[in-house]
Length: 408
Ligand code: PLP
Image (cartoon, rainbow, N blue to C red):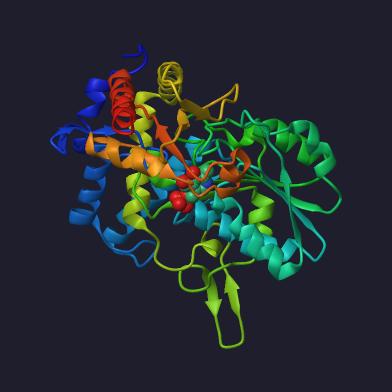
């Protein structure tokens, strides 16, 4: 056990992690796909649904006012988490994917024209590629790519040359969901800003692993998903610089985002409402707020230190396995480890480990360009969270040995 967190006590807050799975102890090493939700967040959502539920921003009923307070309170928790200047700059979405589509469709359609360039990194998740490709196709713009080396680090020496007068936006992931690489986003942002170019940071794999300060980063957009931060699915966040959000046209239209509607025209509300049409995911927002409280209680610094120590331990143990190659060996990594085993397909590895009660992800991880770079069809990925410990890593190592024995 690392000296930073009491994992045995923490696990008591996760029924799934203490219940039997295939007759064994569940070893959950798939938090990059979705984090487990702690009981206090589950109970908060249950209490809201059972005793407090109605719609928000509607009517003068006490019930609606209290629901609105809880819902807006969760927005304030996200603001504090990111150190955003104002909670008005926190837009609720369904997740990272929707946040990026919102920027691409609302900001992008207004600002990107034929011949313009959108600069992405070589290690983006499809969520930070496909929305930009759709926009580029519509507008006749071009996607350009910041390359990476074979350790899985971006080649920043190429960045200056790639930032041209045609570049309209840079999109970069804070942490690669395949390689675990922590990108130097602050440096990338500074270089882009020197040329007046805004930057969107995909924080889906960043915010679960490290304290985030959007003002210190000086990013223009920061996006993440609640379910990767031990919150529920169906809720996500778009943080944006005030001027950019205010200048953006609405993407979706409907109720809750208007000041007045006549047959002739609609006058919209300001941010955040302008970008949040319709009834929101109230329970999920409140649940995410409770998850943030829980993680704060553990301390984001301690979580980061614990995961870093565990990453080191896991890397050393996995590297000692003959025939195993780690994909992604950046100097600065979060607790995500992809690997391939000589002669054995990741799907077979994943299935055998599953029978041993070990949950990992096998596949292309929605990052096919990364697979193409490393010339592998897929990898097996173990992702470690604050509720994992050395025993989980040891179980993985034993499981991999079993896979090797089966395949001879
Ligand atoms: N970006 C990164 C880096 C991710 O890892 C993921 C999900 O794995 C996403 C974006 C998409 O997140 P969601 O499916 O929650 O929208």
